[in-house]
Length: 235
Image (cartoon, rainbow, N blue to C red; front, side, top):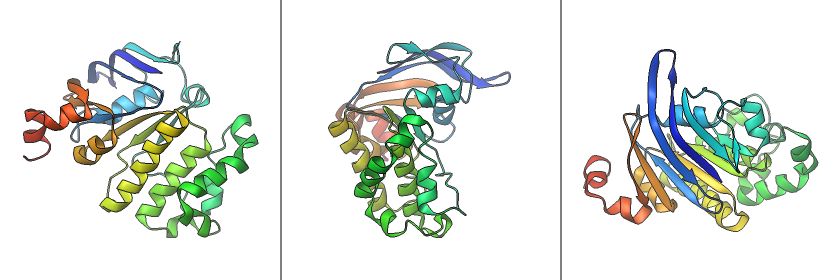
């Protein structure tokens, strides 16, 4: 579904990504792993149109998107849950969810998608009229994910969903993502520095180091890799 080849990108004269290549298929969770500063966020921005690649291709469902706008890419079904959640704190939970219905198709299906989001995250239904800024950190992350689900993603990008959250909350969110991949046949790109959590959820993964793909393989293969164990898992 998503195929990235030879991707280079950066900011001004500073290049961050060097010839990245990876793919994500429908129905699977693929993890992009690495420490802070490895280039994960720049990769997400390049895929979603917020950073213009200087070389390489970003092909989604057979269409080249490398030079398309963020809005065009969003309309094609690539929906991101941003790092840090970025919810509208003064708006209610329901109003935040309404922001996820960004075009004619998602607005038409809003009621049905809202019930799906509430089914995944029932606490949000209980707090529908509550200001989003009064939610706990975990509930705010649930809201960010639910807002993305309202957007009817074909490819869901989760950018550092574990950041600052209790492990049980992270498990719940990753379980929803995995369930959507398997039951709804969507593609999930999980961008994460908590490699243990990511590999427990993912089917496959890629490790980024210094803007390059250093390792790739199934979740089991990466978990057993000696470099991954020493550098990231502390084993």
